[in-house]
Length: 247
Image (tube, rainbow, N blue to C red; front, side, top):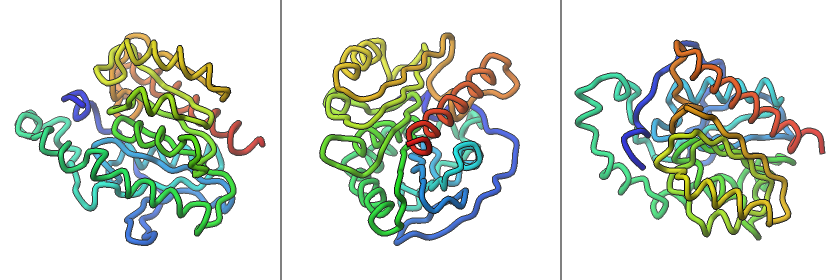
């Protein structure tokens, strides 16, 4: 995880969902479908970030799903001003943040929330979409023997390991920018070598000229980034419609 994870742009728009509480998790919820859910695994900016909430609204509408965006950082918030305030950006201690919010501290909460979706909340089909930090979590939830979710989509995943790639057992979509210090050329080559051998459906989408973070923090004033963002949103919507609604 590098400084690209706290760079980007905040979007205009007003989220239309609602804040709820599920067990001890604060959750932004969009949509009303009682059978189909999408678990939104957020980036470093977490469950309050306007861009994440706008994306949740989009998927709720386009997929006809209930989208659940929980707080997996136990109340810690990275303010979106960090993106465009040079002083706050410079002073942000990314290494300390990673120590507090790495896999070893947050994976258990992610898995606990995911287990509730079918068992306690009664959803019949569940997908997971992970942006940046949330990418590794999506792969873990889709691992062999878990049975927690039915399909995943990840955009520029961070912290992803070859072991997590090897163990995935549900349909996978990857939204991969050309320039990404996390999904490196080596990992890009690895996913495209390994996943097609796993006997699962696989959709790899490549975004030339775009950088890590584009799918949730693109500059809407840049035609190139905006086109990439729209393509990524539509690709994920279509993926989940096929994997969760049409089966």
